[in-house]
Image 1 (tube, helix red, strand yellow):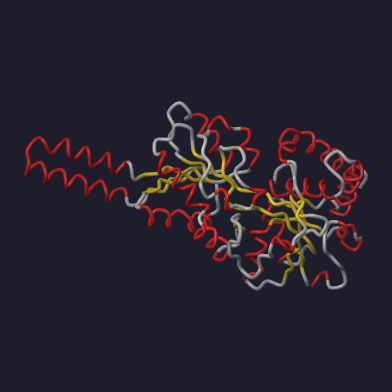
Image 2 (cartoon, one colour):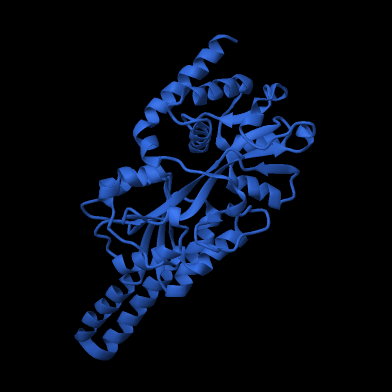
Length: 355
C-alpha cells in the first residue's frame, strides 16, 4: 500500500487561482502568461520523494528540509521493493526525484535508475561509508546487535555470538527467519563474517550449533524478536540497534550488546532518480541529509545512528570507537545471497527433521 502526503497543496492552488483571477481583472489577457509563469515557478519549489523509511526518520528530516528551503515535498511511502519497482516502471518519464532509504544491495543492483551525484558533504562522512559509487549516498548506519533480558540472564555472560552457544539458552534465543527478514539475514552474514567467512565450514558449523539452540522457535517478524525479549518470553534476541535503543531510552530493563567478535554496520542509502524533474532540489536534499545539523539531530533526537564524522549521539548509542567493527563484503553477499540462504535453510530443515 502506498501513501502520498501532499503538504499545503490545496491552499496553494486556491491562492494561485485567486491571484490569477484578480490579476486578470486588473490587467487583461496578458495576466494569463504571468499566472502560468507563477505556477511554473511554484513547480520549481517541489520535490517528489519515494521512501520506505520509518516515520521518526521522515519527521526528523522532511519538515526541516521544507522549512529551510521553502520546497514542498510530495512524499510517497511504501515498501522498498514496491518503490523500486515503481521507479523502474516510470524510468522513461520519472515521477520521483529521490529514493530515500534502502539497502546497498537494492541500490547496487538498480544503478541504472540513478543520476550520478556526489555531495560536497561526502568528505565529512566516516571514510568507510562515503559515496564511492558516484550514484547513491549513505546517510545512516544500521547495526546488528543482541538484545538481552537482564532479569533472565543474571547468571549468564553474553558479550557476543560465542556466548549464545551456552546450553542454558536452549529455546531462549529469539530470531526471525533470514529468508524473510532483512535484520535476520544481516545477523546471519554478520555471524558468518565473525566465525571465519561466508564459505568457511567452521562458520557454518557455528550456524548449525546456534540454530540447534534456537530450537525451532522462529519469530514471525523482526519486531516480535525484541518484543519477546522485553516480555520475558525469551532471554536474548538477534535484532538491530534502532528499536533496541528505543527500549533503553524508555527505561526498559534490557541490555544492548554489540558482538565482541565484530559488529557489522550497514548503510542506509539515498539516490537521485535519473533525469529527475527537480534535479537541483534533489541535490539539495542529498546534501541536507549529510549536513551537520541533520546528522546531529538524528544522533540525539532519534535512535538512528548518524554517518557523519563527529556527529553527536545520545547517551545510549555506544560510540563506534568502543565497538569492534567487522566489515561485510557487500558485493559478495549480493551475488551469493541465494546460496547463503539455501545453505541456511538446508541446515535448519535438517535440525528440524531430527527433533
